[in-house]
Image (cartoon, rainbow, N blue to C red; front, side, top):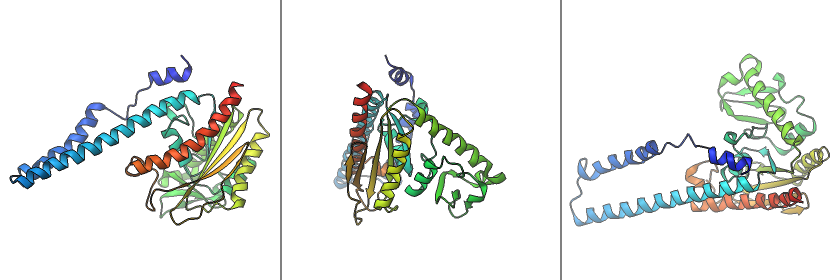
Length: 308
């Protein structure tokens, strides 16, 4: 049994406590019962038909929801084992390139030892990602470049137009941004350690629909790959996935031996990728599978180099 298989066998999801989860589902059901037995009373044939219809629709929706959760978990387990020998680094531009890949097992989670990098939990435009990586992050956390955005309650880097939207609250700005700087110092070290690892490496950038993806910005991300590839002996590939709004023209898709750009349309104009009510729908699953399949194809190519 490999190390990852042992880790999966020993893993327990402490966030899901079965008894508590069942109670959480039954709580609203108890309140629902009052609608027909207290607050109101079901008595007519039409009332009875309404109850039967609600039962069938609710159980059907719950069954579909759990079927998707179970299928996603099974695929996550398969992918974690299959791609264990390939390093995956998020290049931003937001945290979807980390979270969606972890959701489907293409990138390890923190509970399996994965350490966050500087682009995992923040928003950066492509030119900032290029400048930071090529420049070695030397001035990334200089206090004079940082500010606290009162309207959004998180810190920003004014020079690199970066938003640290997962570190919420004024505590991160206190004492010259000491807490934020300490966190990102670790994340930069984690990034350099991941790049230095001997395994084949896949860089993944997700460009959300609110960031315009010009040819120049595509080139910025390709320069990141080229810069890192010259410092590594193992293969280094890049995937760029552009999320496209319904009324948005996508960038031209591209593919070379070490790079691919794909556009994935949002299911709806109001789709929010990190809301379960969006990504757990059939449409949300289809959207994520397009993103995941693009990454998986490149992982397969890298896997062949690791096996060769």
